[in-house]
Length: 397
Image (cartoon, rainbow, N blue to C red; front, side, top):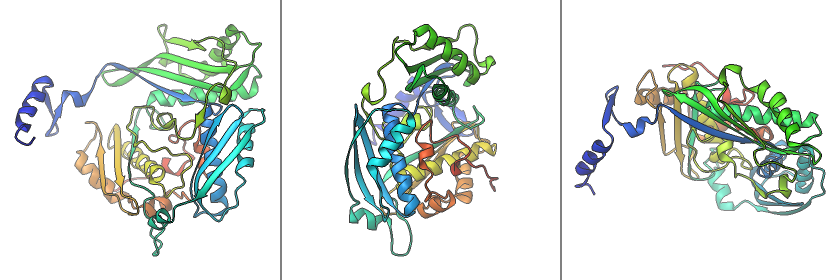
């Protein structure tokens, strides 16, 4: 393979001629398209997958409320009127899983009676000792890779497609709670057109909402356009060519767990950056902060956002990796996609100076041993200024 590398490099160079940027060798393939349409989706709290995320994080919050050092990984699956709660827990808390699940479902807006089955075992002693060291040092709850992303496309430092998709989903839920024609299940999707790498306009908006049987499709379209879309989207982002698809499949009466099954952790693209930034693959909901799938992903977002907010780049992605039981990461890298005012190597040095990815520090700096996670389970884990990983600080360099 080593002997073939010069030939392969020549072949790749022929297919994608290189460019030079700040002394670095790039391929056109790496630079990406300049003119394109990018789409992201969001879902409401009544979607069956989000019902399960909400149940899982409500259970986690109750454990942390009673015992801040709880180690939890309790998930949920739902279909029709049946809920299965399962996983591992190591906690001093006394948790009524069935009551929490039914309370979450009622709060969302479903009035059916549900049967709840629970299968929760104690966390493996091997994992417990890998995480909780005798010297109070905290080890990573598992191996894995985590990403954080930020850009300057919105005031939340989030990509525009997911920013608008979440905004529409939140507004759809607000309107639904005030209007009996609408029901809890719903989805939104926004396609943003980019020109020369910068957002230009919204090309397409899709909203699908569950509704009561008497409602006509014309009533639903008028309601969604006037009370959901127009209050959320700036006029300058839409034009005469913007397409609006409201309940494009027609009637949507059967929804929630009676329309589809749901499981914790199946909407990680909605939970993060809408596909614009990479993700590590591990979900967030259900996991206590010793699980770096969650806490380190939050910290990566914190770091990436501060790089952009401090004017050091227009886009930033941070990756970190851990080994189970180890408190320090095995690798750390940053990519600003050619938008940094300094080289990525210099920015990595700035990150190391201003941030610590040691697991115990992440838990302490972001104050993660508190019952804060139910607020994250719907409409994305990033962008909301109430979260500690969204705060901005002045960087030293």
